[in-house]
Structure formats: C-alpha cells, structure tokens
Image 1 (cartoon, protein in one colour):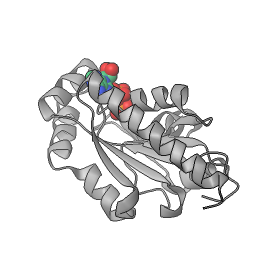
Image 2 (spheres, rainbow, N blue to C red):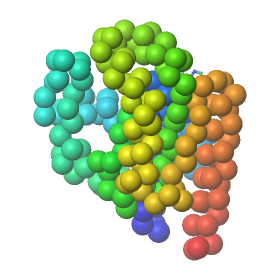
Image 3 (cartoon, rainbow, N blue to C red):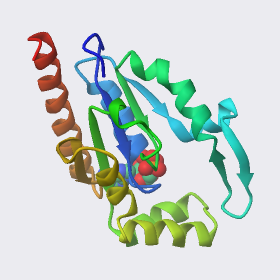
Image 4 (tube, rainbow, N blue to C red):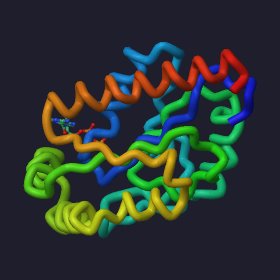
Length: 180
Ligand SMILES: Nc1ncnc2c1ncn2[C@@H]1O[C@H](COP(=O)(O)OP(=O)(O)O)[C@@H](O)[C@H]1O
C-alpha cells in the first residue's frame, strides 16, 4: 500500500469456519492502529456485488471485477482487514500481510454443522481444508514473506494469533514512522 496509508492492509483468509471473522473482530479491538473489518462475503451479498445466487451451493457467486473496483478506494486508504474465504481475487499489491487460518478437519466439520450448512457444502469445505486449497492459493498469489499460516483450533490459538498479528502491526507502524 501507499506510504501515506494510515494502517496496513491485512487479508485474513481460510476455509469457511476456520475463524476469520472471530480473528478480525478481535484485531479491530486490539490493534494499535484503527482497522476496519470488511467481511467480504457479507458485503458481496448486502451490496449486490454478485453474479448469481448458486442454489446448489447456497452461496453467492461474487462479481469479482465489481468487487475489486468497489474495494479499491477503500483499500487505498489502508487500515483494513479483508476477511474472505478466498484471496486470489485481490490484486497482489493490496496486501501487507496475508493470514491463512487452519483448522483440524473434524473440528471444522462440527463448526460447519452448527451453521446448518447442507451436507454437500460441509463435505466440500472439509475436503478443501484437508487439501489446503486456500493456503496454496495464498502462496501462489502473494510473496512468501507476507503469507503466514496460523492454527485456529482453540482459545489459546486465538490469543496467540492475535498477539502475533498485533506485534506485526506494531513493527509495521514503527517502520512507517521511520520511513523504512
Ligand atoms: N481458535 C478458535 N478456537 C475455538 N473456536 C473458534 C476459533 N476460531 C473460531 N472459532 C469458532 O468457530 C466458529 C466459526 O468462526 P468464524 O470466525 O465465524 O469463522 P469464519 O469467519 O472463518 O467463517 C465460531 O463459532 C467461532 O467461535
């Protein structure tokens, strides 16, 4: 992002149910710089940035061109967390940090069951987590030094992850202040 940005752009990604929104909400509360949490899936639905509703998968197919155009000016200002189950649609230049959350598949299955997802959608997501689809996608889309894989299976994991990301933001802020 530009040197004028007030805060970093952090992408939090991972299979649905791995804990993206939970992490993003905590970061908004604990970050030393103001961060706006953008739940991209919710925005797609609420703002109509989709091509269709896929009945089979019970999900909206995002209009990615529209999504990128609409998010561009917001992201340009910095200080945002982009929370989405995919990350390869975003331009590489947007991201300062890409966090990929991971979760054991049997635990993930239970989390998705609680959401009353159709069985097929639970199976598909579970398989994607086992095959580390989102992690591979992140590694293919961004430089390795900004992609971090974090386990999100317990409250301890959550605390450790938040502390680690906050530490990273502190360093980001110092580097910006010194013009590094
Ligand atoms: N590290 C964690 N340990 C235990 N439960 C978690 C953890 N992260 C998320 N959860 C739980 O898993 C469910 C899905 O989390 P959520 O943040 O909505 O996932 P996502 O945004 O990736 O779909 C929620 O019930 C949340 O409380």
